Image (tube, rainbow, N blue to C red):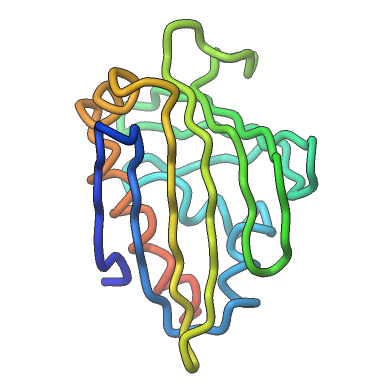
Length: 161
């Protein structure tokens, strides 16, 4: 399993996940840069993603929805705020309505994904910072720790394919 640590920190409003992949940084970057690959790992296995709009450029949006086991759809959005290909990118991430407008009353996080070479492998650090501790607690209660870990753990199979 690639996920090595998961650290929620309510005081700092952060959720930090660290993972290690048996692939070079450039290959791990491609998982996020290619919307078809991103679909295979964004969301836990029982909630596959469909990426509707995608560009890893500053100011661009990534729009997606995940489909649950009963066919229900859960939309989300990213707003890309920084890109240092292939080492890192940052984005705001939120829940969305069916038309991809931000869902009111739902937490928004600022995320920084960093990929660092470690010999022949890559250490990935995923840091999500929430506007409030209550927002972080809300997504923790919704199962974000388990869901994100299951999603990230799918990357190994994609890299091996």
